[in-house]
Picture 1: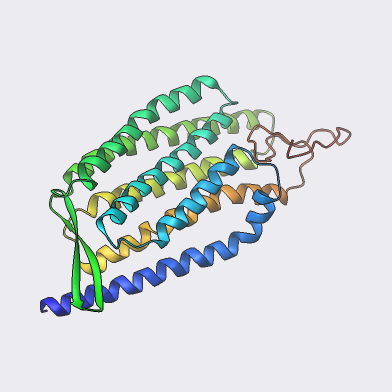
Picture 2: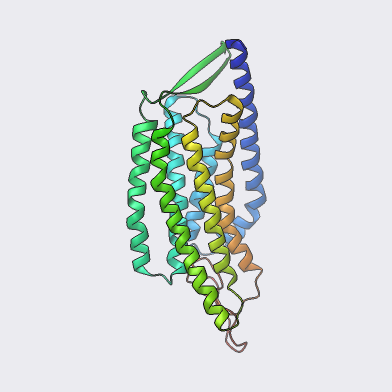
Length: 291
């Protein structure tokens, strides 16, 4: 395949993936818009509301822009790191609530999270912000047809090593979530009560977040390898759609589940209107879920 044919082939794949990304993100936003109006704009805001808005709209901006120059390329890489940090904050906040708003757990998780943030910044500076490591080249097919391609000048090993602490931290968060679920199931079994729906949901979502973040770290590592055009574009399709679709959905699904739940006693511990305990005696008055 000649140089011109390779450029046209890469341009075709770039156009296909770009259209697919915009279509998927837009379609998901349309599907979720009614729920967003109900559970976000139509109620009192909480910490989780702000986190939802951050992952929803920051993700949309990141997914729909194109790297037309080196500065825009850097913005996309730095913003993806910010997005991954936001998903970690969601997990931290959920664990803080699961552990009965334990300050010790919160400070522990934030303390361990600080080196992860520093690591993300270091990776973005050392790998993504140095022209000796990565550069953006403009391919001119005709005077009216141009596109940009990324050239990687070092192998995937630095990115791979940098991802290890992040993955270890995610494993730690999952272990904490599983531990609280195990304790919860044991206590409920002793009283012959069904497990709390929301505790099970949140732990399940922790596992999904872990898989999602693990896949993102794998993408960041393999993107430095000399991948074929097809594999690289499919990886970009995953990176620019899956995290930005799943993360907001996992947040809003809990609100949606609660809205359709016949729960008498409500707890504001989650600050997003969830029912944490089984319904008490019917004579107990109902509490406003959004207090």
